[in-house]
Length: 257
Ligand SMILES: O=C(O)CCC(=O)C(=O)O
Image (cartoon, rainbow, N blue to C red; front, side, top):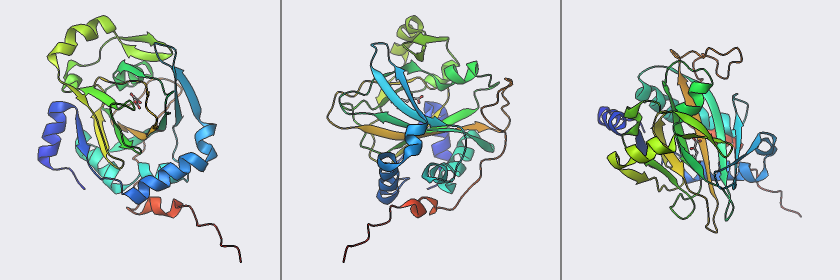
């Protein structure tokens, strides 16, 4: 459950690491049931267009509420692994449910997350994400793809692509041959921890199956944001108990007598 020194070494070399089965099938089911039945997803819904004008939907929030998403974001096996990888204590930054719908979910253009977060005023790229696969993630349904080791480039210039923020394409085409492109095919419950400067993308979902995921983003406590409007308080992320998600299980319908 906890990453070893060798894992940290591999993460620092590659800019990412997979941890299989970090979430149990029961926990994944509770999160999927919540997406299907819970209005908080709709309350925070955003639609972004990719370069081809296809819509890609996500639901995003910057606070920990009393819900399954806060439980998942504060699990010891998540927060402590984030601390192990960043080498310091971290604050919760935001959570987002990515709803890549069957046959319609659009692409995410090549970018570094710090391409977005630099513009939000974060001083350092001491930020990272945990991508939790909720559905099987395959090439056909638009799994994440990363350029292994690309976090070592530092931040590239980003600009508008559709209504997303994308890395400078001319530069990207020049540097891509230096890196291995890795398809992040993942089973539900697997987590991909990745660096905020890792270049990543995902294709549209042309399959008959959704590709839903929950991405949790954290910021090092030593990383202030110089904008007036703060998106991240520099408070240590609370840590809940390992069974925190289970309390949000759907109660069975009462049997009619
Ligand atoms: O969910 C995806 O396919 C990509 C998401 C992503 O790139 C991001 O949130 O930074």
